[in-house]
Amino acid sequence: MLGKREGLGEKSTQRFRDGIGGKESVVDEQMKVFVTGGAGYIGSVCVEELIHAGHSVTVFDNLIEGHRSAVHPEATFVQGDFNDRQVILDAVALAQPEAVIHFAAHALVGESMSNPSKYFRNNVGAGINLLDACVASGVGKIVFSSTCATYGSPERMPMDESLLQKPVNPYGESKLMFERILAWYRELHDLEFVAFRYFNAAGASVRFGEHHRVETHLIPNILKVALGQKESVAIFGTDYPTPDGTCIRDYIHIADLAQAHILALKPEQTGFYNLGNGGGFSVREVIETCRRLSGRPIRFVEQDRRPGDPPRLVAAAGKAISELGWKPQYPQLDQIVQTAWNWHRIHPDGYPD
Ligand code: UFG
Image 1 (spheres, protein in one colour):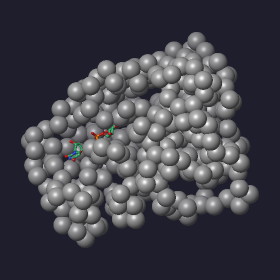
Image 2 (tube, rainbow, N blue to C red):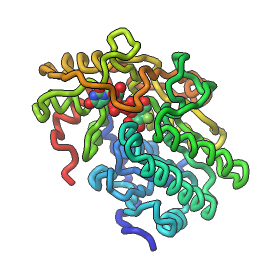
Image 3 (tube, rainbow, N blue to C red):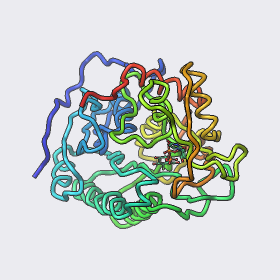
């Protein structure tokens, strides 16, 4: 049985843009796109960009992590859970999309170390229900949110797509398993795919931002301190083999991630791509950036390492730039933090639901 279905799917004749920049994003051809996890943090901004680019979007989300008010009003919304095979088969059959963008997943490194079953069941098992729904409905392409966590803790930096993938946590392993399944579905069912290995997604559009019901991510936790909602932010580990002893990550703006997904819809694009900016920032540097841009003091407390965290993850994203024509618009950490701060200041309690 299909989950709750709402929305109109009608497009307003006057397209409005309430994203972060003034850039134009245009596609050659309007497509029907089915977005799992479209009420979540990255999904909501991707849907916003898809609609801005003229595509017609169905959002499928169980609203466990996502928020109803993060669903773009011009998208058709289906509330459902892809763990239920029939629900996802029916939802894809009804939407008849040309492409699926698959964001819905559990995505916390730390949680995956304490509850691996949750990650394998949802990210792999339920994901297969979605793939079968794509095959049953003749969907041509799936764009998948994979992660740099599939590489584990590589020695070589920056990381390109040719690195050996050796995950160091069940989250990364679950995404790698799904990448491999995608390759088999392409081989055996002609379901084409693009898999994006994201580095650390951050930032916000004017309208949509980061609101996890339990917040574990670095930047929103720092900004909660800036807003006076938290007394301090933890620094997990100060004895890593990095210049200041804290972990280094490559932060990438979610609007830039969204643009890559739109480029990936073109039929000629297939394969695996890293998405990052190629710059690494330590936890201490991110705290300092948030302090400087917010103008508020940020108290921090040094703690033990968090299990499953690699010391350093920095992307080489040249393949996406040369093959997809991807051009990040917000590559500076300052731009990323500033847009996040703007959103958190206006939405100190996140989404109303
Ligand atoms: N960190 C802190 N204090 C916090 C939160 C995080 O010190 O309160 C540290 C972490 O230990 C890590 C870094 O800040 O070193 C970034 O942590 P996040 O939790 O913000 O992000 P992760 O790197 O753990 O994971 C995120 C996504 C994953 C994705 C990964 C890619 O949650 O889905 O980026 O690097 F795979």
